[in-house]
Image (tube, rainbow, N blue to C red; front, top):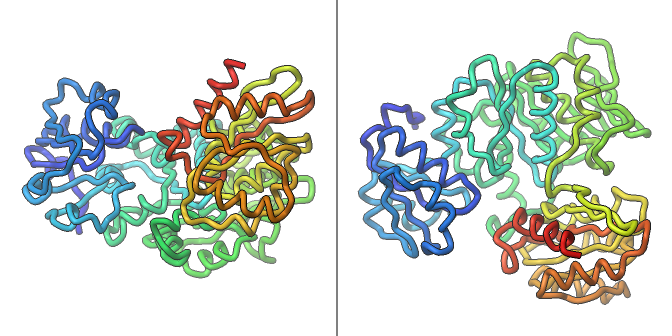
Length: 459
């Protein structure tokens, strides 16, 4: 199926399914309306829940259908733009003539080379570090995608000599299946662990969508894979792109960045002498972030960055909000926001990132994930404060079996934060690293992280 051009949008009847609160639906609706489409926005949430999003679209002549979906808005539309969270087997989508996403439309219009990043965890940090390194080396880079910045926001600014870095979720990639829309000059795959199994059912189905990031690459492109991850080796064996590895186990004779015992990463790249890509001293905490920085450096190099500029740029990358973000220090206690840790393996990595005693705030809503593979990691916390949720119920069973003490679960977030403050002694770190989704207590993981920082500010 051919990608849409601007002339395909003007005058067309378009339904945007899922306005949401992250900005993607807002950007899609605004862009389509400004292109001359007759836009209907439909969402199961009502006007009060979507008030801020509706205000952002005032004056654009958009029709809103809220609190329900009407079949005729799908059957009569020339095409439908779906939110990634909407399952593709929705009967409304099945009744539509054509289904697109903001990403599929963007890719059809974009003239700027793209670096694409996916994975289970680390993709936001890696994508942000790539954009940081490119900008630091003199190449203008724009960052968007799953990181909650719509690529429509910079479509008309980015030129052929610039670079666009897109963080892509498995859902976003799955929506591109068969469209031949994505051919990044560099694709990066971060560590794969079980995630979203409440939607996919099996790891095979989940990883199949991840594989789409390199499906249309060829030997003019680079695919950057985790050498320490069995899935990374599988991706490397399958892609038609040129492979660059990162990690401690880079195969002998292969190009990539090998992480050393001191945390630095030595790069061996085509046509160049080996050099230290990632210095031993960096701003981002955590051994897992050494791999993310190595992957980012390789991607920036593949996108044209001067290798000489990369070590300093990567060393100075400060990290990303909600990802091991140290944001406050009170009474000798550091407070760290890792709200984007939505799988148990991310909690384990966070607990490994610090040498100081940790009061861990964790738990939330289940998404059919297994805590057992990392159950021993929770012993590293000096104290544990649990947030109420279905995922917490699973975790509690393991903690009880292992004799690990905890407080809660709390269904009042501010009370949980105050209890963590009571438990923390000078020299401790209070770490919010939930290992679960946020739904139930919060709108999303970003709302959870902001609520954490607000609660700490009130202490």
